[in-house]
Image (cartoon, rainbow, N blue to C red; front, side, top):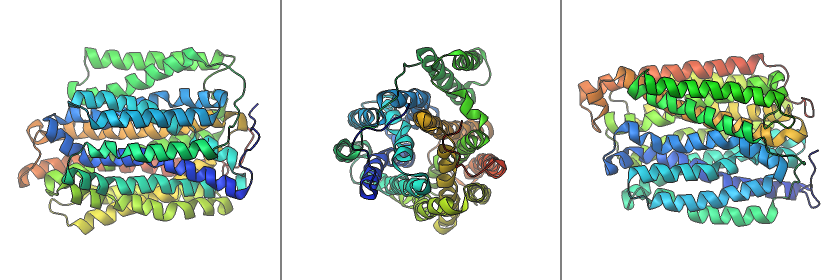
Length: 476
């Protein structure tokens, strides 16, 4: 049974110190992700790498995280959330240094995988820590405030990445994680309580099959855009399907499964998790493609791209805390549905951007998507975590984080798949496009954005039809 140790953060001041520590560590992942999205065109040109190879710089990071989050969530339930979180911080700091010194794009991809291993530990347990620390009537507010760190990281990353790249090199964009990470590690070690885990053992077979399934599936999505359906991609997809079936069988028959499949019988948990997945697919279609539009079509420099991309996270940061607090009083369903619907509307407007759009036209569309995201995320996360019994907070946090990061990876892969299917290869190979080439490129962008709009519209529907407001804590 899940239990807290002596010295748990019970007083209000102690609870918010824990929240502050989680926010300080949590800001690094969004900074890193948003910096990489903005400077990826620069990295591509620096190494002379094709877009299909450069895609792996953000994709391998998200893929590694996504493949390990379930394992780390269960590990947190057994060993304690603090130990897993701190180990992830240390690994992330070291890997960031390696990324900043990478001699080739292939080494950078390898170090990004190592960075993902650490980031997975950091991302798997924060929701569990916060849900265990805060009472139900404050949970939405805490998750909403925590969203500030995510949004702040996303807001800081683009202009910081553009500035550092313009001043010296893209390498500084990774090295900046080191001082932030050290400060976050020291603070977290001091204030986060030692939440005791429950006795148990790791479901090794489940962890291995889950990793292979997720990795193979995301690798298939990435490679099919370049190779099409053939022996290699067909084999990879078959591996993903077979290991997925094996994973479900193992979890259904294991005495101590890594994932308690009974959690998915709860409609709030299952539909809320699916909504999060779909929303993040659409979000990363937007954040992956838009910098390439700004660079290749509008010919913006990195610093201007970074500044404009902050429109999205700044809007999230402005509304997420209020949305979370409001969901504590009004419930989560209507707010989450409205937020996802706004995201869909924003992507529809992005799909019809002209070749020569002014900065303001791009900025307000990004801000509208951020507004919808801020309204959606905190209520949705509160509903999902509030529907889970306390002994399973770690794995529920891991499942929600897996949905988020798998959605990010699928968003990048889906965006690339649509572009390569609709845009001529000669156009895709160029870093600067003339008017005719830009029109071809915009055709691919249009249908990618519309695909994202359809996915997050489904998230709105699922948010609206789920049962309850996510307050069934303690019930499976």
